[in-house]
Amino acid sequence: MLTYELRGPVAWIGLDRPARRNAIDTALLGVLEAAARRAQGEARAMVIHGHGPCFCAGLDLGEHRVRTAEAVFDISRAWHAAFATIRRGRVPAIAAIHGAAVGGGLELAAACHLRIGDATAFFALPEGQRGIYVGGGASVHVARLIGTARMTDMMLAGRVLDAAMAERAGLLQYLEPAGGALARAEAVAAIVAAQAPLTVMAVLQALPRMQDMAEEDGLFVESLTAALVQTSAEAEARMAAFLNRKRDTAMRPPGEGRE
Image (cartoon, rainbow, N blue to C red; front, side, top):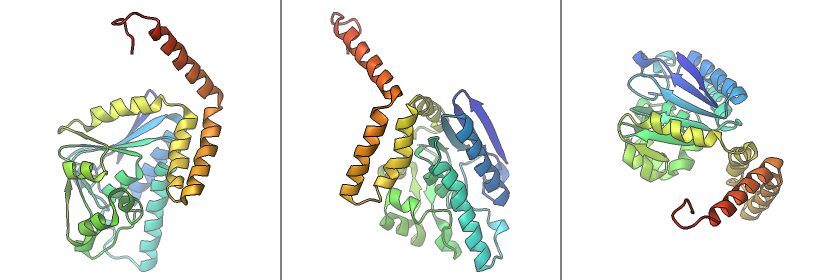
């Protein structure tokens, strides 16, 4: 159902139900959450991708045809908990997307911190056509990424976003040619994994919370976060290395590596 590979500081997590277009059932949700927890303990970044024809076609509807309201509620909360492991963890998550990222697949992509798509990627929320409603966090997280009006259009009018539209909407941070998402994800993950841990913590944990605060509260927390991060031993060492490098390049004649 899922592959896990640690390449240096980067964990590669691959949904591996190609015959079901990587649709998420209860079993896959459980191993995905476990893989994300494992990555939190041994990696500095993670890439989530799909094997086969697409990233993820969403909820496995075959498992959910007949459910009570209580069961649907519990399943939705299980999705929230699993995706929170990705969103609220200490390791930046990058989604590498090709083909369909539909319904729960879009919700999984939205749980990641960065999204890279290739030209084949497309995004939809077909729950409205099926008489159901999103349950994996889209009401909050997808709506924040693309806006409530665009999400309404996707759910009620069946609007499908192709890769170019998704990039313009702010859903994708990178748009690559067909087949190029994994290579770009590898390059981005290497850069992300090299960042200072306290800076990563601030970006993943403090920055999203500031968006929910009143302006003055957010600015106050920004100042506290800057004070914490910028007075660390690692920040001091990195700043010293940068300043020494700048002094070295400043002493070189033009054309010999000066910035």
